[in-house]
Image 1: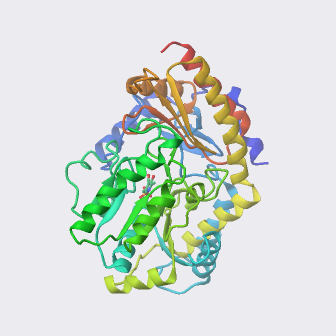
Image 2: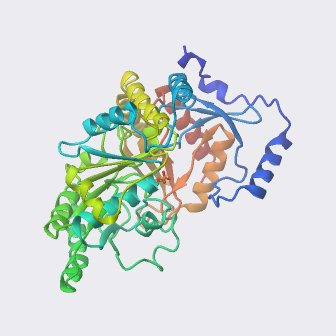
Length: 450
Ligand code: PLP
């Protein structure tokens, strides 16, 4: 019944405004006057969103948009089963996570069951940034070292430590100038626009890691670990070269370092073909961090690791988060998992994602602006270039395409260091029909001439 509420793609084009246009402008003005968060704005006229259901969002003026970019709300918007579960739990209990209650035991058990063998100990927090900060602290404590490797072009959060290992210049412009001395970025193994191209580049990119480690060895400095996403999120969903992590993980572990997989964006079924991003590289990390989709938009994050690594934290002090893993958060997390399973959302990400990727690749045959389609499942990136040989990024064109798509009822956002990649990360319930609607609208925009 819920699915039947969705408008058909044709209806998405019907802009039935029932409020004066000034309302949206006034809201934007109030937001700019009093909302402190310096967020990037990707649109000339950002829509002021009022509600959502499934893969759709509706603005204050009644316009409906297909949400192709929301990498948080994996179940879709306004899921009634989740709303009911949260309502029930709020009425019953929500409290400081210091207390003992059943939900935390049940949810930790379920997360541990999803992780590879041995990763059986769970910390619950409120965001991806917090999860990554905690992962770094765990690695520092367990290794008795401080130095951390990360990949250039990576993004791991805004908090002090997660920001320090975030070197995507689009997200962290200070990354290349003011970096703490414990952070050691290695060459971004970007197989599309890095110095080495294609799946045969593994050896060269692994070789680029060696001097960084040898420098630490020569200085007699230990290595605490290595943090990365196993499919490059902010570069537009570019997979790491085959076998890259197997070799780099071995080099890190040979020096006593721990391997941290940031699964905040890539994990939890979005890849369709795999539940975890690291499966794509056939490795098992020592520490997994998750957030975003696991709470479907509710502030929820987690770190999953071994008991030995978790216990090492005692040397650093102790872990406590007032609301991390609260009764409501745990119920949200468990209900998200139930719904994902019952509605087979990972399978949907696989089937609809493969279909979407094929259709986007077909657009590439017709429009030279399409440089490449990266990623898999519903974790895709469509990279626009002015020239397929030189790969000059089509940054202004990408911004204009996003604005035009918005007018046609599709919410989309640029990503990547050059903001020339369409970030395609819709709710995992995206239907094939609506995936087609998105490609049809994109085709229409590209046909208008670029
Ligand atoms: N790690 C990755 C890969 C992310 O994409 C993000 C957020 O975009 C984070 C960590 C930080 O998560 P949060 O915004 O919940 O702090």
